[in-house]
Length: 454
Ligand SMILES: [Zn+2]
Image (cartoon, rainbow, N blue to C red; front, side, top):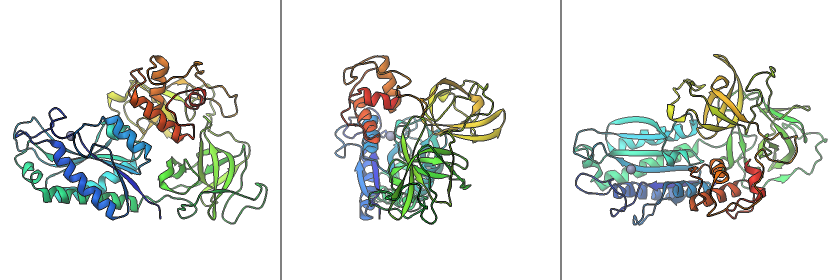
């Protein structure tokens, strides 16, 4: 049985260390948040879940938002939850209710988590259900795992404050949130050819040309493995050779595929070690029920019309989301705050929608956009090409104290604010990146780390 890890966060800090964030009578938001967080932690621990607190549990400091998400990311938490209590204008009123936020755009896992939690905490608070919301909050944007932010009730509401001043209600809310998380984790087990295994994978002793084990397809370097699974949720791909949602890096849909590096044995099952067009390695199932293997096809599909301006976009490419874009491929309105910015293509799928034949999943906003709405900027390094990165290594180490354009590039790659100043937050994000990519973890960008990033 896999041990799950949950990052629990009480918003802000106590003792007045965070400006504002208090009731009209001067009670601190963190104190309410902390009571809910503590109950949530106890309930999770009682169910065998490992918990990381990402705020200062003494309340004496207000930990920065990036430090909070870095802590959750570095710990490879399965889920992150941040507890808050809302304020309207800071003067008493009768606005009321409980709401739960996920990041803007589509992230089905986070939304499912939000639903499980919201349904339960609404009952625990006994307040109006304001529903599920989306926002560009750092806590839900910078976390690499499904993350939600709960606003339990209004601190400046004469209705809600009665609940917030009742420790039994806050405790019930924390327990309810934990139960929602447990329900989510209980149903989030990975789709794969075998049950999750905690044993390290071993390479198949059999040469790749031998008869495949029953139920698994064979394949070797240079061939392409492609999903034949039509389920809407797609197949998982993992950062390690385990069928374990802990290592889930994303999903890929029917007809989408990868270049095979080799086949590996995982417990009694098989996976393919694959790489994307940037050479980043992942693991996918080798179950004949879910995938097929094809000859010498390339890792990513190419457009039949070579003249299309987006024909060169590959997984790993950087694209700009055009200002004229109006809706995501999935139909929601695209907020103007995300337009005109550069994003990394994480997945590509074929569609037949409006003027587009392809859609791209953009990593930083975790949303599918149509081909017609993006503009290609750079092309990712070809997997079959030479060893040089698209942006050449500047030839010197980039570390704490470094400044400038290269620092901004690094900050963009690791997902922190691109102010061009290499500080502590950038260092810990670089370390997390190095850890995720199996590089030496020193928080310094040398040639090896640079070439992995670009
Ligand atoms: Zn707050």
